[in-house]
Image 1: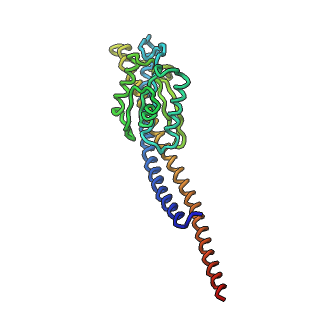
Image 2: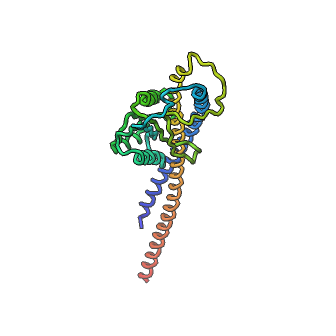
Length: 284
């Protein structure tokens, strides 16, 4: 059995750890609320952009490359992860999905490339020598579009330049504070565009094709940004849940250690009493 001093040290260290995890839970909760608001605020813009693009595509004979399916010789994967851990299975689920998708769909590394967002995705690709076209780390907790505009526009340009023939994004979709779902969406070419509610009549100047040439890249970039906002809300929610579980586990451990400490202390007192009684008996 561990000594009283050892048990006391473990209780003290676990108590300090619990204070840290509790503080991190509170910080993540505040960040999650802000990130959730940002994701929800972006939805109306994304929906309106989709409505306009869908209206043009439906009512004209649009032939923009982003709307046309072509032979897929190379696929681009955008993987959105966090820059740090302590978020439960948040990063592992995304990277596992990415790895499984690659294993199932590709036989050679020449058939795909990865756009890694987040240090975990970057390190994952480097350790496994996976082809990585672009990467970005150091994302703020509440990222602005300006922060990721360059990598988003460059990724979309890769499709326009036919460096890739298909663009897929993998990230954690925010459902609620306790539920995040790994989601895989095809961004390019744009398929199954929802045309519901897009019956409004617009007058276009100079013309539909010219407007599509401008709007479609912006729309694809907005999808990337929207997924990033969604992923950030999921990250903070996952970290909040993980820290809450850590705090609860610390509480259970402290209770078990306190019980062990009291038992050891009682055993030590009993042993001392027994020795005193034994010594007194020997003197009689």
